Length: 78
Image 1 (cartoon, helix red, strand yellow):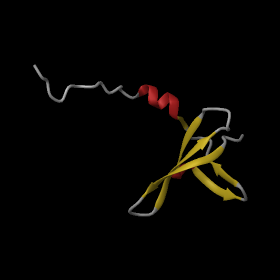
Image 2 (cartoon, one colour):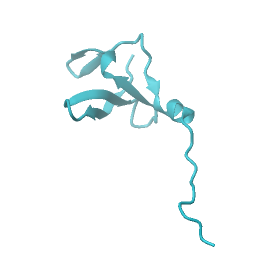
Image 3 (cartoon, helix red, strand yellow):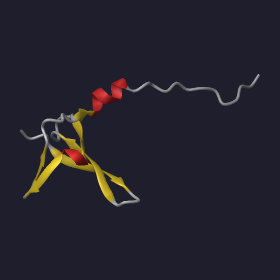
Image 4 (cartoon, one colour):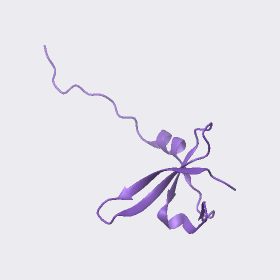
């Protein structure tokens, strides 16, 4: 099954390595997946084959689990 197209790369600058691939399912869909370097099985012409035993994390569901930052006053006047 096709997950989509590679939209962005997450790089580790010091080692000049690709750490993760940000994959979008289509132009009309807002589903995004982070594919780790260790999930990549091989590259073929115009394809990247990934291990389906490790399910990619949906970014939207991962974002929902993160705590929401609350604004605080840096200096109170009065």
